[in-house]
Every structure is written in C-alpha cells, then in structure tokens.
Length: 292
Image (cartoon, rainbow, N blue to C red; front, side):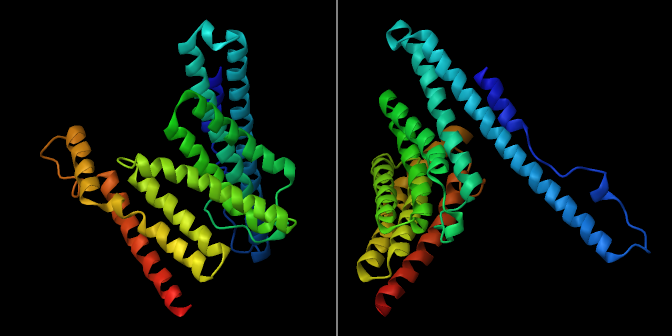
C-alpha cells in the first residue's frame, strides 16, 4: 500500500491541457485584449494545476508514511521480526525525508538563497510540517546505523534553516535558526569528509552552500575567511587519489577500455563543473579579503 501511494505521488504530473480555451486559434479580427485574457486564464489554470499536483503528492507521501507506521504497529516490536522491522524503518525514513524536502520546495522554492522578504516568513505550523518529517527521518537512520542517509537528512535540514533564518520575527529566533543551520551543516560535513570517496560531488556542493552561508551572515573578515576555508577544505575531493578511485569505479562498471573523461562519466562531468565553481568562488573571496 505504501508503494502504491508513492507511485500515485510520482505519477501525478501537472501538464498544460491540450485543446480548450488556451489552445484556440484566434481569428484576425479578434482584439489583442482577448488574447491576453485567454493567456492569463490559461496561466492561472496551469498554476492551479501545479499547486494541486504538489498538494496531491504530499498527501500521497503522508499516506504512505501512515501505512508504514501501521506496519510497525502490526509488528509490535523489532524482536518479533528484525529484518522486516528494519526494512519498514528504512522505507519510513526515506518517505519522511522526501516528504520534508517536497514541503520545503513547495513553500520556499528551490536553491539555497536565504529568504529576505518578511511576507514569505513561514508560520510555526508550516515550519514544523517541513522540519518534523526530516528530523524523524534522521532519527530513524541514526537508529538503524545508516550514517550516510542520516548525514543526508542533516544536509536537508541545514538547507531549510539556511533559507529561513533571515526572516524571523526577532533576533532570538534568527540566532536559533542560524545556529541550527550551522549545526546541521557541520554534522553532514563531518560524515561526507570522512566518507569522501564516491561522495566528492556532494561534499563540494555542501561546502559551497556552507561557504555561502558564512558570506550571508557577515562581510567581516572572520566570516569571509571561514567561507574561504570551506572552499579550500574541498581540495581532497579533487586530488589524484579521488580521480584514481573514480577511474577504478568507472572501469569496473564499463570495462578497462572505457575512458571516463571521454565517455560521459557522471562523476567527471560533475567534478569538472564544480572545479570551475570552486575556483571562481575562491577568487571572489580572496578579492573580498583584499578589499577588507
């Protein structure tokens, strides 16, 4: 039943309707205002359809989580069937994490840029609707000993707090959210730094996000220096050892005659792009330090 709900959540894609008012061809004698009205109506309809699709997906994911919680209730305790219990727990944690991410994206949009418009400040209820499932996912992964996914949950929580700390109602709340962002970034960075091989792109992106957070906090020397340090900490991700390990993974998967830097290897493509991003970021931060 959980899997059925997830299929329903992913299958409901909002697309513009073909035919109907938005697709009607206007005659030459029709006024431009009619065309504008028709276009506006179509756009509003598509926005409404998109919002409906988002709400539907979240409802389906919540229903999937509810089925998994019922599975735990049916088992009673882990000792009754440890393998099944852990399987349900893994699925439950994954469902909670996806649900939290979806809610964050639907409320705040994508990206990691802090929200600066007070009108976009989340109510406590909406904030809990994002944070609670992510925290539950993190707790379950930690209990299961799945350090990788627990770190991923920390990272997603960090992204949330790094976006909302700028639009709190008072300084106390601002400090609370900012502290939470740094705490979760730190926890994620500790894991991905220790388990870097194969996770280099994630470590670099995380470090860039943390660097941007330091820059957003203050333009003073200390924060800019810490932002620069975050970028320099990624050097091992671009090291010869990291490249050799990536090549070995590619050869195991594609054969020894395949050349990863020519055959569209995903790791090499990502790291090539990230190398340019890191380089640009380092030069900008150095320039800022020189100006200070």
